[in-house]
Picture 1: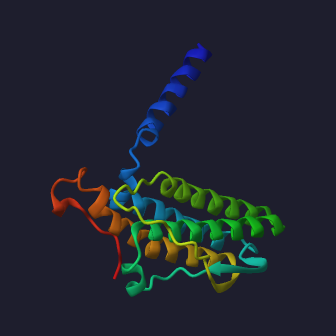
Picture 2 (picture 1 turned 30 degrees about the vertical axis):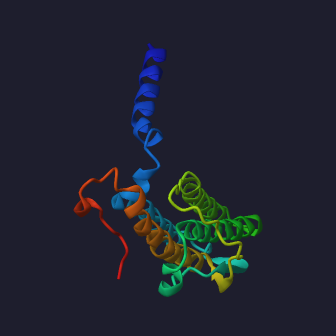
Length: 196
């Protein structure tokens, strides 16, 4: 009897995860709500920082990458270059978070940093699966510049959220005309999440 209940539970868990496991890579880029859902997790982490007393201050300043979008420069980049820039910036964020986690002394802060690290890993995996066939240019080898010195977890999360709302969302908007055409035949069904 206990084994059958366990088996039913496992079937239920697998059934709820299957749609996520079998989702096409284009689903994230073509679905504004999927991206907004991931962004809301950052807001949840920001709330967790407030509720975790004494966890906000980092043991040493974090040198964070530039996260804002220079519109004129962005427009002149190829999709490969844009993808590389977003991926490299996320990787720098992940390195900063790993460094902060190794120096954290509070379990609450360590837990929050692990959550951020997993969140960044999810974005890196999504970008890693992105295939841009129409763009034959190679990505630039320019290194990501540091523009901000964060002394608190709140500042790191705010800069991370700016990256997601800015560069990552601009990349999604640029990709919609390329990879979402087949999925969304009517142009009016392609939605943008870029905030003005």
